[in-house]
Amino acid sequence: MSMTSEFRDFIARGNVVDLAVGVIIGGAFGKIVTGLVDQIVMPPIGLITGGIDFSQLKIVLKAADAAAKKPEVAIAYGAFINTLIQFFIIAVVIFLIVKLVNNLRKKEAEAPAAPPAPTTTESLLMEIRDSLKTRG
Image 1 (spheres, rainbow, N blue to C red):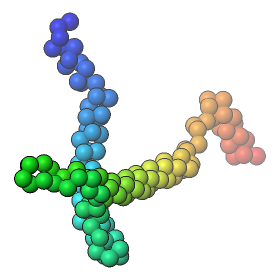
Image 2 (image 1 turned 180 degrees about the vertical axis):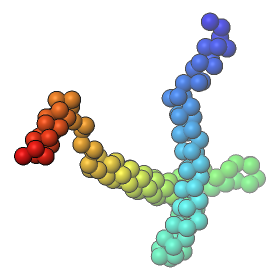
Image 3 (image 1 turned 30 degrees about the vertical axis):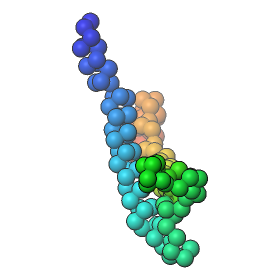
């Protein structure tokens, strides 16, 4: 078996394709959540907290030196706060999706299954019963 045919068989497996689709959708979902947090959630939080832009919060360890062309050294804890909020939003959304899927599965499981078809013996007994009812 050649290397190309092995690779083709590997890629053609359902699990690999499903994983690739999941990764791509996950990346797109991450961009959506980032936009949601940065553009919708954080402005009202900043307004409530007195106009603080969390992404700009930092502790400067060493100021930038323009003459020596040295950049500022800082701990950007505001970006970390934004990341925590994004994580919380993702966790809530995933929780709601899983809850919805579980509810749908539960409804499917609760739906009464069709009664099993009678066996041959049961069918014959029902015919005998019915014929006795019509005679008597």
